[in-house]
Amino acid sequence: MTPLKIIFEDPDLLVVDKPCGLVVNRSQTIREETLQDWAEEYLGLQQPPADKQQPSAFFDRSGIVHRLDRETSGLLLVAKNQKVFENLQAQFRQRKVKKEYLGLVHGDFEDDQGEIIGAIVRLPQRGKFAVFDGRKRVFTDLPQAREARTDWAVIKRLTLKEEIFGEIVKPFGKKLKKFFSEEGRVYSYLRLSPLTGRTHQIRVHLKSIHHPVVGDRLYSGRRFGKFDPLFCPRMFLHASKIAFSHPKTKKTVEFSSPLPFDLQKIFDKLE
Image (tube, rainbow, N blue to C red; front, side):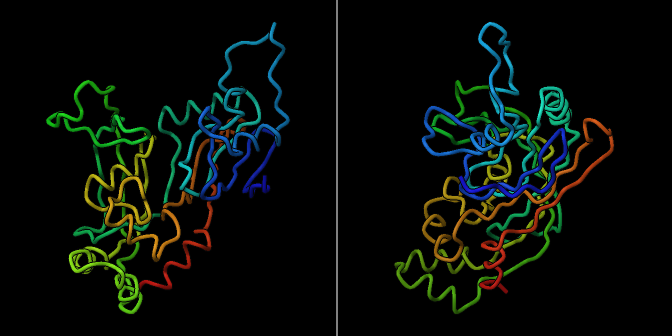
């Protein structure tokens, strides 16, 4: 595995910069190398002998405190021991960890900032979630929805350059060209702060207000699923900042990661 970029390291924890495409945790369905494989090797973790084993999330997750989706890049915390792992997980549960993401989404916003509040539930489709709406039959007999909130603020309002848009829509038929002309030119660059940590939360919340993340194949719909890859190579979502109380010093520490180069280049196509 290619070595990961380490933003910070001390005797207690690591802050790493996860690239897009890297899966965080191992599972029975994942055959490729994961960030967990890297962490286990880097930290030299070995499970205790069978006769001394106790259930341990620290060993089961190789010190990885939280998750990022495969397609999301950015900052991730890895604990080096059980005590630090438990401390950091408690901070996440108590919502003391502050996270900030950068994302490019479809469409414009009337306001400069706001919040999205909507409980999230897992759908029958494998690996897909939605904002809960008890009025829809699709939600019948599903696991209990979990409350979620995402704050957002507009950094820039952007338009796809006319010459680039013209090249992208050439292969499409008349109906799709009309749709993209109305819906595929305007974008918003957002600062996003999830106050809860549900799976796919930012992506699901933005879809629920009809502003899907650019390049999100799972939630942007079939039409944008064809359009977005022609100018954006991957999902435009990056975990750019994280702040928490250091488990040993008790001082608040904050780390940041600049927007990756492949996402920076997308701004050359926008104005």
